Amino acid sequence: MGIKAFQDYYPDDLAHCYGCGRLNESGYQIKSYWDGIESVSHFKPKAYHIAVPGFVYGGLIASLIDCHSTGTAAAAKYKEEKRGMDSLPPIRFLTASLKVDYLKPTPIDSVLELRATVKEMKGRKVIIETNLIANGQICARGEVITVQIPEGIKIGQGQIKGQK
Amino acid sequence: MGIKAFQDYYPDDLAHCYGCGRLNESGYQIKSYWDGIESVSHFKPKAYHIAVPGFVYGGLIASLIDCHSTGTAAAAKYKEEKRGMDSLPPIRFLTASLKVDYLKPTPIDSVLELRATVKEMKGRKVIIETNLIANGQICARGEVITVQIPEGIKIGQGQIKGQK
Image 1 (cartoon, one colour):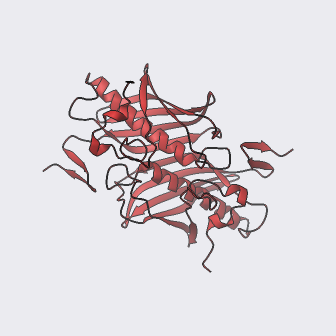
Image 2 (cartoon, helix red, strand yellow; image 1 turned 120 degrees about the horizontal axis):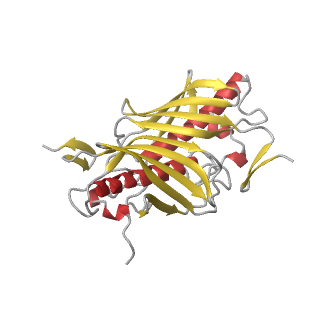
Image 3 (tube, chains in turn green, blue; image 1 turned 90 degrees about the vertical axis):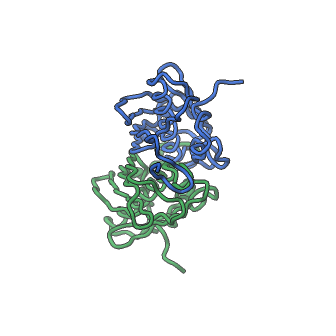
């Protein structure tokens, strides 16, 4: 039995995300873990995830940074509240704004490492900085503004609506 | 015979992108066209491209904005140089920086419309603003800083290298 990833704690109705939902069989199913004060995730792109032959597609890089960052925001909030990630109610974050700077071409034949740190936590807003590393080099840098889904908001089944 | 999309003019060795390459059978194969001074593209997400059930995954939105924007940057450059898109040498742009603001949840059961305008053209740098619209509402807004691939740079086969 290994350590559970952040995403393994997502409640079933929030576990369908194409990037990080463990229940989305077509998706990337990324897994994120604490490594000291950073969070880390590893991902091996498929051969067809290319921009130009040999290099990873920027949209995939943005996707990985996005999901690793929202997962890290939730994990950091549990930590701040001194709660286990299996405690209720569940804490989940959505992306308000995503910025990715592409610093170097990212080789497709490597395992990509995502490393995130919490840059700011203020109420429901958490800003995460996530670097994408390949072969020991930072190839992309993301800043993700995430916002906690308010309690009492029911998400799923095609609607985001306030609880009645 | 319909009008050719921007992406239909990409040379074969630059037509493998997961987002917009016509030769990437696993990819999204988006198609972009001029509509006056804006460029437009339409995309129908698959059922599994979700964030939470009912709503489009933010990583897909970032991907579509990215590729529609680089395609628009190239098309705008051909226009500026008063050249046909089939003229040589080919003009292609890479993404230096991508920023997406997620304004509203994007419904999965709609055809997504991307509408881009050129915000700035300065030498090799072109800044594109792309809105993503679903059911008549702007759900996400992207700003993409693109940079023209210099002539004499050979891309492909796992390397980006200067011509010798």
